[in-house]
Amino acid sequence: MAAITAAIIKELREKTGVGMMDCKKALQENDGDMEQSIDWLREKGLAKAVKKSGRIAAEGLVGVYSDGTGAAVAEVNSETDFVPKNPDFQVMVSNVTKIALEKGGDKDAVNAETYPGGSVSVEEHIQEMVGSIGENMSLRRCSVLSVGEGVVASYIHNAAADGLGKIGVLVALESSGDAGKLAEFGKKIAMHIAAINPLAMTRDELDPEVVEKEKAIFTEQAIASGKPANIAEKMVEGRIRKFYEEVCLMAQDFVLVEEKITVENSIEQFGKEIGAPVKMTGYVRMALGEGIEKKEDDFADEVASMASGN
Picture: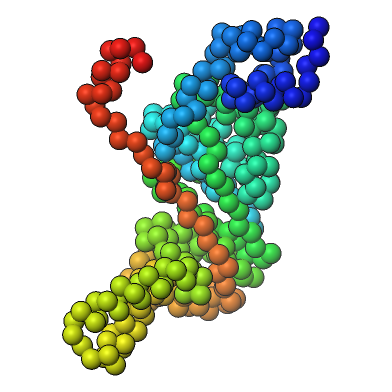
């Protein structure tokens, strides 16, 4: 029998996109013959995952998982919005999110981890699901927050199942106060973040390029208004302050309370209510398909393609 080396397994994986273990088995079953191994994988329904790999996957689910002082959020994509309704897909996303917390949000480490209850990696398990479900899917990203003392609260918007939906938010609150009250308050902040989508927590965390771009726009508008230079400068300063209030979380009006109060002031007030200072140390907002350019197919072309068998 031909020697099954790591190099030939890697070559077969690159040609088919199938997981390492399946590639090794295919080569063993076919005495190391590359073409026969490819045919074997196709016959087993595994290599069809390759055909799907070029398709845009912008649907799927965002999962959140918290153990109290730490939490993870992960996005696993699919091609259509039918797959997120699949119980097996939901279980997979939940498991991947839990692994993300264990691995500190390292995507490569998550993909390499052995999938629960099996002998293949997370990445290989996802590829197996591609073959069985018939759609391209992948772990797109994951992130983790933690605190030494306090809670990392979480919220899922448009929930499809427990801890699964279209928008996932984590909020890290450091405090020695009651954990239950902290989690409840943190969830309210997370809901605000899901709805308003701030660009940063504070003005110091804003991308300087974003601020400079806004200043340039405001300056052009001020000059175009014909105001004197000193007046135009004050107009720009005022509009930049307003811009900070609109896009920085701490400066935004807290939408989940009746009184007009900023998120920052609300956190300070909440700390007084529970008798312990509360400090928000970070947040993560992950929206399904965010930043993915979705392909808009022409319906007539799609019908013609189906008719021709492509």
